[in-house]
Length: 361
Ligand SMILES: [Zn+2]
Image (cartoon, rainbow, N blue to C red; front, side):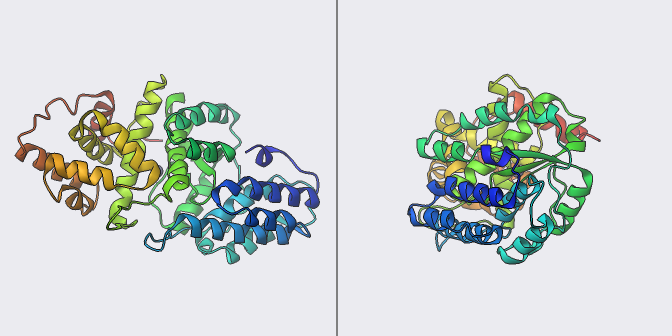
């Protein structure tokens, strides 16, 4: 989003930026009054930020139905902190604002005490942001979702090891080389890792985080079904990651960027099993589910192909490796010839990574 990239000279200007930013987020909210509320609260920076926090809360209410649980981590305040880190002669202290947001925005208490973003500017990486956005946009068929994605295009920053160790400690997340801050258009890449990777992997890594963002806009990064909501649980995070990675790998490769590495290897293989079992419409169905959060179509189609209860059983698996074993067995028992399913370039990459382990850096 352009206003995030522009430097501002004063707190007053910053407030304008924040309000414009909130207004730009408007399409996510059906009623225009929230936009007007935030745009008017320009008395002080604090007020504008408060307006934004309130706005974020309303957006969340719109996106998450009563049935679907809200995600554990709310990261909207981090988007605010990017704006703040751009302010050079501000009358307020950006650290104070960060702590204020951390204490005020729900879920933000899990954030590390680290107010400096964009620690590693890395222009040699961020030159790829546009290309990654184009690849991600190519995946979004829904015109309204595409419009909302482009109204607040992804902001990619690269952060150093100090940031990542704090972040991973604070969120108890496993080792990550990229983070999508849920509830924002901000994604953070781990510079020390990508310094040792190819351009294609930098781009594919960005696309992966952007697909998370598109899924957040389209369905709250949730997994649910028309009848019985499954919700986000520990057991389904791996499924979202596998789907996101498979989708990003295929899209990056089609654009001519071939990553050497296929992370989330087992998870990607499990999703590939579903895609192949569903036949020629499989990929489209998986992409639709990933971006809308509605897995009803996949659940029905998979049960039709592989027997009733297949999808429910799949959702009970605790990780990708378990899911692969589960589907392998069902496919075999159904007498389906799956001998060629593991031969695609993405599958070969995933298998290689399982054999050789993740790259050292
Ligand atoms: Zn991910």
